[in-house]
Length: 112
Image 1 (tube, rainbow, N blue to C red):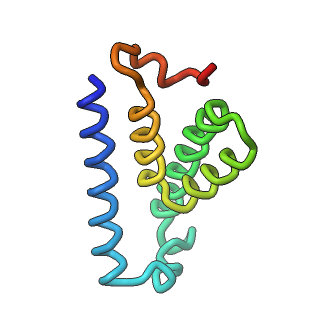
Image 2: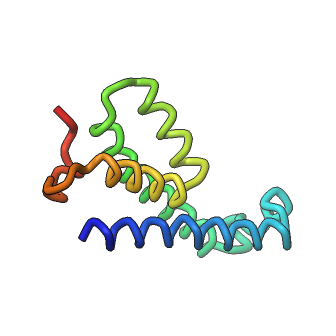
Image 3: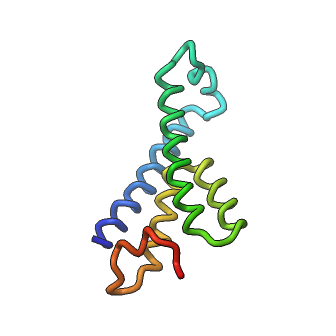
């Protein structure tokens, strides 16, 4: 299962990097602000709210896992700025810390 999760989160990072790079090359994000107005595109706004509430939900778990305020602040900024790329990087980091034979359930808990 650990190998599957590593492949999954690597796939997410690579896919998001490619898609984001291609979109940025075609049209910079700062040129797209008008498309995210409630009146012109309510579903774009709803999707952004959904994504950021998902990022915030994931961050609550990260804040529980991390012991220092500095790490919590850094991960908050990374998750809010990079979304699924940062979340996948966090998961890959946590998976790399998992020792051989240690159950996956250990990923969910704070290290002692």
